[in-house]
Length: 529
Image (cartoon, rainbow, N blue to C red; front, side, top):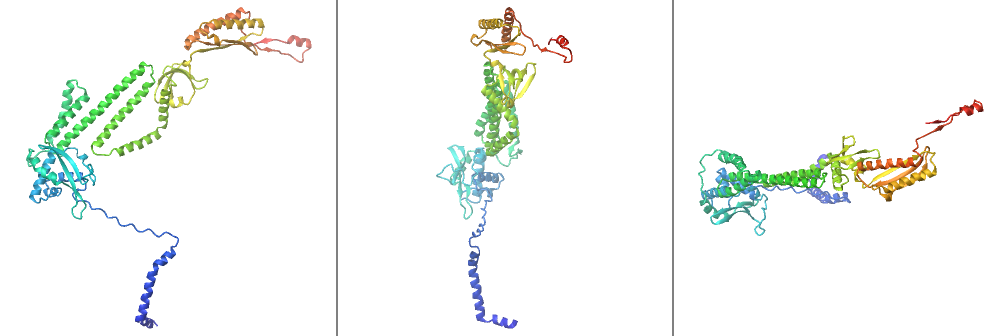
């Protein structure tokens, strides 16, 4: 049976039918797949493989890369590599010679701020009409300023690269003849590409200049600023090598930056002292702490500004640093909530002027602490209590408690309750009330419109008379003196009326229920306490 089956498959008709069936199944496979997945989204197509853009082996993708790569190759005496940075038809020895001349011109006169050269593949796009050209620097020549231009060139199928333009290369030989070239074979001891002699001058001239100008009593800020201006004026007029000019330019920039920050700190200090004296003369001592805070914050801002300018000078983007400061500020705020609460409370006290230095306060409820405000800081307020101790209260708590400013009174309250003995007659009470009322109304230190003297109650052991008035003074010692005079006068009035002040009394009756009525009546006692 197996052999027969093999023979059947070997027939031409059966082979043709088998091939047709396979073709039909292959053609119907997509239809079956769509039918089985009906109602469902088709599977996403596989992403096309990302073709990595080829990078130039010489780093000529950007204007800055072309400039630095050429300087590196020429400084290393690799003439062949240096010639590949030139957009010229010259070749061989002529191209090598042109690259050496270009290196000498750039090394002698190129501006030292290489970080200002664009590092973008599209260039700086400073001239929209010529987007494929970029200026890497401007040098001084006998015929006037010369722009050093690099242009974007496509070399076959390779990505476009930046090369020194033909226009720039045509002017290089003439500029090269203006430069006094020192033979390159003369050995020199260098550190970081800078001659040791130059390092010695940098390390000696700055302290020496600072010392000599100090003898003339010139302020330190002006000493550094004049030295920076001198370096900035002298260095461009001398054909120093590029790295040495970069060193001098960096020194000049740092001196300018330090003197600028120093000047800002001096101005801030002078302004803080002036404002502090002004508020002290105006008796606004509590503002002194706010002035100190503003002084410190301004100092921090001046230093941070100097750091950001330094980062920008070296071509670094300070945006990340500012973002880091913002995140750090949030972290500090979360970690120092109580401190910030006290600081904000201190600011509210200062701006609202709820409390001032020298005020007499009662902090808290009726049994609170009484004292004189000694100082108001940003974190806490110090109060000199009546026991002559210092009570330090956080400003966050002061902002949330009740404060009674005793020294803010325009008048003092004279209020007392007189207790007359029960033997006092109605006539005597009228004499006491009229005498006290007349005495208070006639006193020059008492507001007559506020005088009130009334018989108010029958107390358990006295007849109470209320005395109410306002004394025209806000000074507490002066009020105590006037109050003493008035109280003595009231005692005289009571004595002249024929009565006296009551003292607490109690009548106690004791009896024995087993005794006879006669004895019981005799045993009753009256006891006064």
